Amino acid sequence: MKRRFLASFRDVAEAIKAERLVAGISQGELAKQAGVAPRFIVELEAGQPTAELPDVLAVLTALNIHAMALPAPPAATKTQDEVDLTELLAGYA
Image: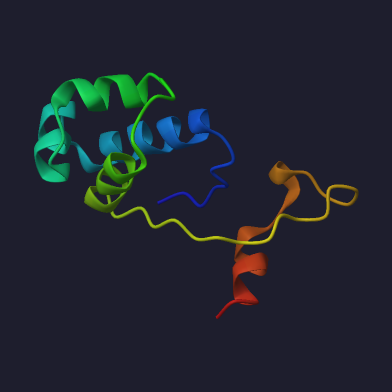
């Protein structure tokens, strides 16, 4: 799985769709695994930010995506695209 910051709902939607495609499962199969309605997956992947957090977490869990709270990098020194996640996460090991 590609490491990435999920800084917006759009980021979450893109990560879910990308991991579902890598797993080779349909939206319907993901919905079944997560215990949500298929329409929820469609709307979630489309980036509709009205999703309930417990349902989003269930989908992330079904895809083996784990959320981790990390401090934001200093804004003045690096952008999200410039942060080395491996280096950042090493400080939490």
